[in-house]
Length: 279
Length: 90
Image (cartoon, rainbow over all chains, first blue to last red):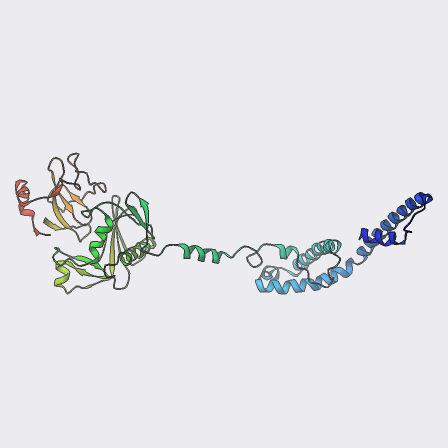
């Protein structure tokens, strides 16, 4: 604004000043300064007078804002309040918006006065609807998708492997490792005395471990389908998965015609797997 | 492996007679869940030796690594546990 005014007035000045015009040029500068001061004062006074019309306009703007707020449900609380409280809130909002709008018009005169206010206290309030942050559901989906699938193993070192559900398989048993011991239950042993639970999955280790993971997660949730027995640091979970997950083999199971198994028994020490089998 | 019954704890494993690696002590050990009994009376509560070495409860040996082994018929006879044996498994 100021350079424009100066340029406008400087255009009226003669291009080639005579030497005696030094005094005249300084008087021109003073005149320009005074004019600018008067102009700014008049602008400020004009702004004060237009405050009332701005408020009317802002009420219209408020309607625009409220309609957008209805989409987010943010007007539900003010509507529950009394009429006086609501009008007081509206007045406060209008006065705050007047100040903000004045700042906007002062900084950017090219904006239209009829344009709906896009910056207001209600608008700048960070809500999930207007926040730039990604919604939490997206984050949880991302973390869920980044988690390994049940049955997947992670090497913890020291010959210990951790499943997706957090079960640990380490050295131990006659087979020297719990994973090998578990995989004994991937196929039948018809000559084994008593029962021998056999997992479905055609000997696929990932499928067997996925069933164990599923049973463990359900055991942690608890419920009617979970039976828990504890002795010292040993915990035995018997989890009914509600579907056929294997059959009963061994000498007894084969005599009975390999009945279906719907449950998994987990023998754990903390999260360390001792054994797991269908029954 | 000669067994004396089915494990009452996990209800799946066979209870074999295990000879420890050092002093030749005999215990009853579940081949499924490693539950351990100090005598052939499996109606008592089992103990659960530390994993994965399964130290012998009587000496400084263990029940996992050789020369620890499943008891032969002669070793069972020597200890007077023949009457408890129910059968032999692979």
